[in-house]
Length: 132
Image (cartoon, rainbow, N blue to C red; front, side):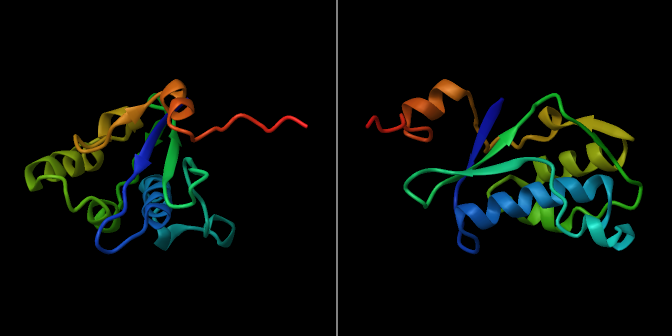
């Protein structure tokens, strides 16, 4: 398992941004306009919270295959990354729109850093349980 810490931006908290990203990744396969009621809260990856309550991260699988609907709308997903250069966003959009499937690892923007479990432990994401 790998992790991507979602930093807050001017519009979204870390938690809101993480939830938006995982939801919009789901919408690549199942665009909202075509979803059934039971898909209304579908997501791809889990979101974990740092004990400080402010930081959140996506638990990701870089090899996870995302099937790409020809009806995909990437507006909100791309909007979640205002710090990504426009050329890079256009390239990622083209990759998704021109393929029937991709792996998650193919669409991680250059501004995101993938962390391993040990990094997360070392930085207090998974504190040791208190002993009695």
